[in-house]
Length: 167
Image 1 (cartoon, rainbow, N blue to C red):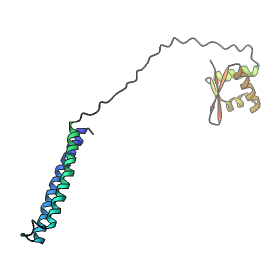
Image 2 (cartoon, rainbow, N blue to C red; image 1 turned 180 degrees about the vertical axis):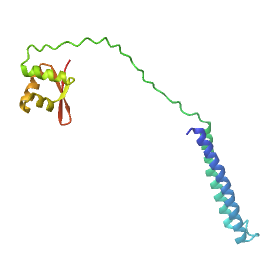
Image 3 (cartoon, rainbow, N blue to C red; image 1 turned 90 degrees about the vertical axis):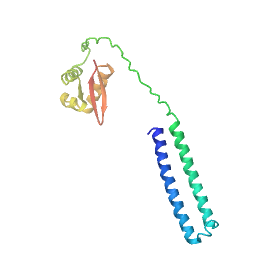
Image 4 (cartoon, rainbow, N blue to C red; image 1 turned 60 degrees about the vertical axis):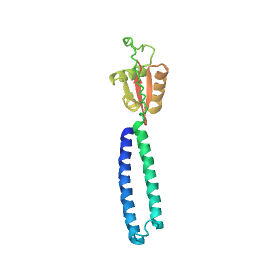
């Protein structure tokens, strides 16, 4: 909410409090008149305490009104908005994918690369083990060799590895 709205709300509450204070004051003075009698009501000690309580309550309401006026008069603080600039980077045209030179590879390594190409350039390591009919140790050694030659990359996905063919 804006400060002005809060200020107006506090003034409305202050007006209601003033009405309640004067109604309460009037009711207490009637009680004093009935209990002390009309002749003694002005010098009755209860009458003096009623006046003190009324002035104290009006002072508190006056403070609320001052705060409300300050809120209404004061300007709201300026909002600082920082906008992020989007930077466009010109990307040079992509070069055509180079064909992999598989002439230096062993038959199993060539077969694994062909399986990866057929599988969309990525497959789970377990699926490759099945298709190559290799055990865990043999597959791991084969993948280590191809990874060292930078033909493939292994990516961890939970408890499985995905073998990705590098381009």
